[in-house]
Image 1 (cartoon, rainbow, N blue to C red):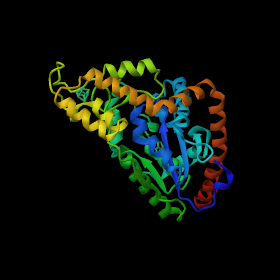
Image 2: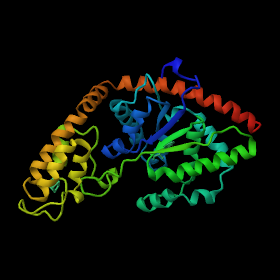
Image 3: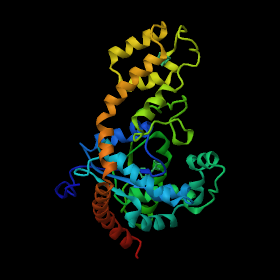
Image 4: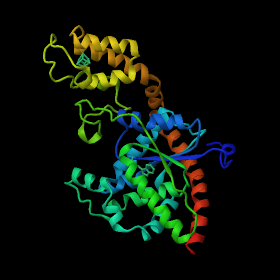
Length: 335
Ligand code: TRP
Ligand code: SF4
């Protein structure tokens, strides 16, 4: 982020983060990243990779978190997060997040955390893993610290994150009530895009093994789309299809122009077009849409030191902003 654009106070501040618990896939792109990139035109943006949050579940695989952090940073940059305009950094490089996390932990009742839906959901989903740690229960407190420390006005998030944002506001209110009006209650910017189906029709997720990753090789992308489930009732080429239940069609809606889309819908219903041809067409559209992004990604992946340098500069700037808040916070808590 260029110095002259910072601190002018004219632009509202946006902050968001993603855990480095895997490489990014199309669901992450359409559900978040695409919107982050657009927000850069209007806001002062802070975007970060939440590697401490990743450790709440991947605590026994530290090497992986480091690897994913680099991959996610590469994905962010390839997709258009612009270090000239926005601050891009890694959470664990800005220690003030942890300091504020400690202070917020003092005033966050445990029942507030046990009520957060993602707590129980994720625990059930990952039932094979021991998730009885303080860190896992305290996930939303750390997230609140991430947000509050930049006094962010807006946080772009998917619907699943709304309870975390509500909790952040409650913690901020409690802090301000106890210590004075120091922190800012953030508002959400909900990303409208519906949940993107995965290749098997369930929600696209790295844990379902149904995702197309931004960094997948061309051949793998083709193979994944060609093997994807379509309308399950369309067994033979001559069976009419139902685009509304077909996930290939859901992707066409994102990548194919409206006129052609209407034709495909009609031709699917009348069995004029077969799924193989429909998929081949989608693959072409996909490579058109992501050609530039994927090229940029390859270049960045070939020069990881460039990514590392951008993250290092981002951390310096983030730390300045975080430290400015912490000075007021320490004073307010009489430390
Ligand atoms: N919980 C978010 C996710 O899983 C990641 C995150 C951590 C975050 N801290 C944040 C998002 C602060 C927004 C703001 O994607
Ligand atoms: Fe889906 Fe296309 Fe097959 Fe219709 S023709 S079922 S839209 S893949």
